[in-house]
Length: 350
Ligand code: BGC
Ligand code: CA
Image (tube, rainbow, N blue to C red; front, side):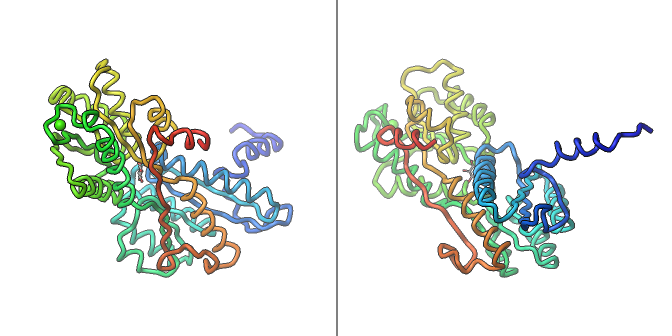
């Protein structure tokens, strides 16, 4: 066996353990004497662009708070890679290593009970985010929290973008002038609260405004751009320029639809594409006109809500000071509409 010299081991440890990364220090006292707050986070899938924008924001917020010098803040983010077993094991690990708070972006939002039971036994509060457990599970313990968005509002705002475009210039939306909007709908993952509710409210709002819709096709592309490109390519082949609007439950898929139009070199008579999230690439697409609009899903506000709950629990043991908690456990952040009329405002804050 090769003998590794001590200084080398030390060097290796230092390079593995950077302040906000996956270093599991099994002590609440940091060497300099300041207390450490340890937050363990498990993601359903790290490659999800929106979810990773929440974690990026969270790391920035934690770093800034840490710079106040009161606490060392460790945020350990693990990727469950879409696998429930991985996620359960990651929670076990956080509990075994005495993390203060566990943040969970559920692989399966209907299967939160195993995690809840483990956390309850260990008395570790859980902040679920982005993938909402069913209410019955949220009732299982009083140290469970949820941070997410207002799916109904985002669907409604997405509809408003098309309604306004229609009111402004009918022929730019109803291109064949038959009095109806022919559309396709790219849906997020089946069973995800943001997918079904966004679709429902988007369609309902347009109908309530007296505009007739004709669905050409709808299908799930599981929140993913590449899957959306494949679906949209087929739809273009089937329906050609009959498609007047592409509704998408998120921006990644909306951008996938734009990609399909680009791949087929469609330059004229393109359908209006509208998404949700406000990803930087979608904002650029709104600016250059390849998307008609998007709805901001506020990843910064969600990250800061997660952080505030975690910080209050770790430092005070309760969340009494957080006024925006609904039913003492829910925070749902708001949304904003983005179109060519106000895009510059959002590009400035990107
Ligand atoms: C976002 C999607 C994301 C999904 C992941 C939704 O709220 O809008 O972009 O893929 O959450 O759970
Ligand atoms: Ca039409």
